[in-house]
Image 1 (cartoon, protein in one colour):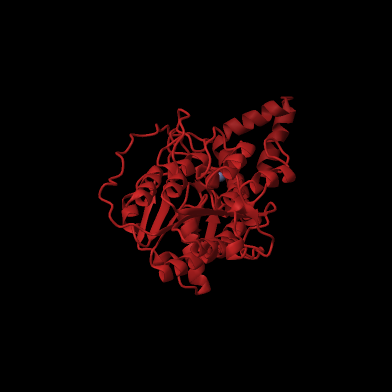
Image 2 (spheres, helix red, strand yellow):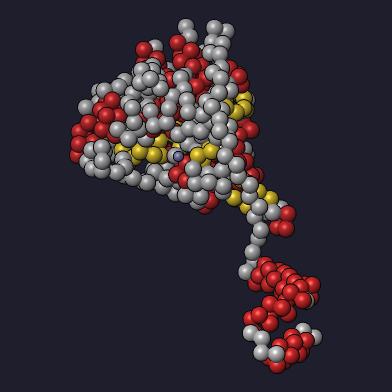
Length: 418
Ligand SMILES: [Zn+2]
């Protein structure tokens, strides 16, 4: 018994008029073996008890900052050996989607018993989305690389790191008598669509991007408006005035104008967050269907950019539920695109991402096997490589893509191919 033992000591100590704290010190020092063991035992008991009472888990993380340079430039892609030219090209960019997002998408389709859209791609690979700064990037730099074939810095749209204007895929397409279109579930001047149309130092130059969209050769534009009247973003009236200079605006029914009455390219503009997941009206799938109807009704081949912003938006917030809903929207839209290309037989479909967001892991907890956990490691972008998938004529050339800029380089070469 401990307490009688201590009490006995204190009694003796009082008799000799020694200060009580001093006495305790002597007690502990003389009996350090017993008191240390007692203290260690009490602490261990409290620690183990707290695991059960509060359901704590020990998470061992190790982080180390590693400095990287942008890396050696790769040689330009071998484009002189291209000989298979697709008639139409659909580029689907799932902003913020990495391999773990893709794994979740595949798992959720298995769970729902839906045939996998991912298995339908003939070419499956990855690319390094690094910017001119190093392994990390943002949508401005990465979309510029994909749209132009040249790496650049963060925030920049359609310019190289020295501010020189870069020719983009849509400009080459228009020169070669293609129609061009953009469908996004984000706002129309978002960095990803902007990189295919505009050239400006900052992705935040909304007014400049809108004016460049209106003076471009773009034939179709479906997307949202955001932050109207804030900072550099014009208010609603001014935005519509800019867009009307080029586009005929569709109403909510998305009914296409009579063939004979089309005198202008078309645009459909929605409120912020109006186009999100499959429960939204309209949703990305519906907008893509309308876009494909319109583009195939024209007499020219086309290049269509479809962007889903949902993975990036959800992953910045570590919002697992929104990721799962967004993946369904991406898969449903892809299913429609692949059905179109299957029937058409002349369309190259390219699916990729500009970077990964969230450091997502589809992790297994062996205590809860076989259930999966969605675990996040950051609220920012990561430097992990991202998927690139291709199907259709010319798809095989994208098996060699190692860096994001090679996508733009290949697309421009395929469009220019005679
Ligand atoms: Zn982001």
